[in-house]
Amino acid sequence: MSGSNAAAGDAPGPETLPPGTMSQPELQAKINALEKDRDEWRSRATGWQGTYQREQDKWKADSAKVSDLSNQIAMLVEERDSKERLLQETSGSYSLLETEFEVAKLQLERTQILIKEFPDLLQFEADGLLPDGTGDEFKTKLGKFKEVLGNAGKGNAKAALAGGSPVPPGSTQPQTKSDLWKAATEALRKGDAAAYEENYSKFLAAS
Image 1 (cartoon, rainbow, N blue to C red):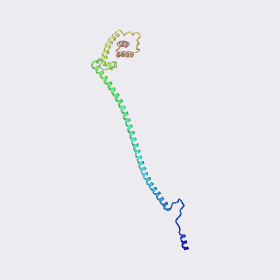
Image 2: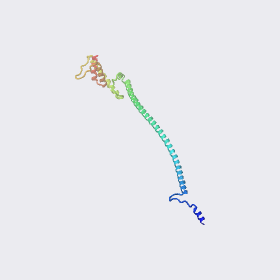
Image 3: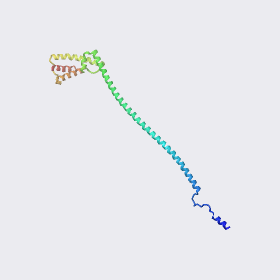
Image 4: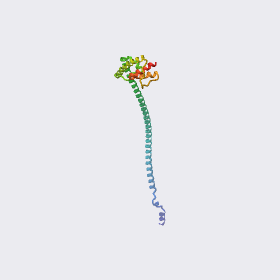
């Protein structure tokens, strides 16, 4: 009896753990749970890495596209500015040609009037002595010019036969034949018969 009790007392009892300590099964279950969470987050991180890589590649592609578009815009702006400069130059040339055309047109009109109606005044036009103007206004001026010229011619003939006319008091006498001729032609252009007669007479006297 005592031997049986001794044998029973020698058998090991259940393991006694300190308070707060997990058992082996509990610890394994905790490890398994943590490994599951780790694998899940690793999977997520892998997905995020792939998404990040795709977005980065997209960003690089978009950046390259933006750079390419910027270069195209710069080229188009330069082309636009170049065409605007060309347009301004062309407009300036056109305006100049238009002005020259109008001047030539008016000059042709003057010449046609002279040829048809006042051919005897063509030389005066070549010398730049005829008054300005075109059309009917020019014709009226030419008529007066011829009248002044006729009267001045008569007066100069008399002055030449008399040896020239005296200088009126207070008048300024040019010093050279060139000055006298310029003064006479200028007076003729303005239609001032008296001044023309005076200066032309002095020109003849100085010859």
